[in-house]
Amino acid sequence: MKLSQILFSQGFGTRKQCASLIASGVVTIDGATCANAEQAFATDGLTFTVLGEAWPFHAMAYLMLNKPAGFECSHKPKHWPSVYSLLPAPLRDRPTKSAVSGVQAIGRLDQDTTGLLILSDDGQLIHRMASPKHHVPKVYEVTTAREIRHEQIAQLIDGVVLNDDPLPVKAKACERVDSTHLRLTLTEGKYHQVKRMVAAVGNHVESLHRSQIGGLRLPADLAEGAWRWLSAEELAAASINT
Ligand code: URA
Image: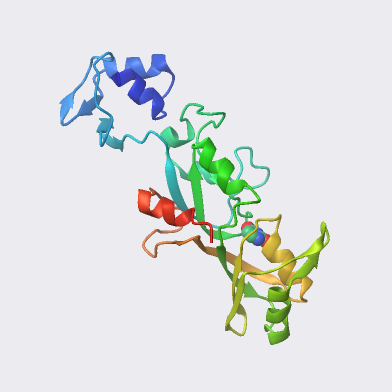
């Protein structure tokens, strides 16, 4: 792939901006400056640097982010900063691929929810994972305002009726970790589902944290607000439909 196309595909600006970046001598590959925008490189395993910052080539972006509280999962946030502001500019500015512009969060979290968020610009993956047929279990650590009673756990597993759907929604698993800590596994992603299910059994969510998607756990060494590329194994684990 031509160097100008490589930079463009990775979100370093318009084709014209990428060509001028290259011509200005700030792009290096294997330690050597590449000022020729037309020069072609194999993209497999390629890392280039722009203004000294190394960037690994990824045909599609697959990332995980440890979402802090106080960020909205929206490109046009209303009251809080956007979760996308936690990503470097090239990830926000990747060109549109199969109707997906830049990376998108797959399965949003509320502004005040923390934890594991997966983002991608792979339209097929976003579509597949957002489909109601795709029952990837998601694990939430719930801190409740009041002591959790055993009958509340039974109700969450048997199913509770939420106001927008006559059919009860059930937790796939529900474990009382301690008196105010519930570990809840859901296979759907309805609006405010955890908060509404916990309210439906007469308790209240004080804080909410997503610790796992499919077989992918939020790594302990990924700080709040930090992101990293997903490996192929991690991506496969996160997509497992159990
Ligand atoms: N359920 C909620 O209520 N909020 C979230 O952010 C995620 C699941």
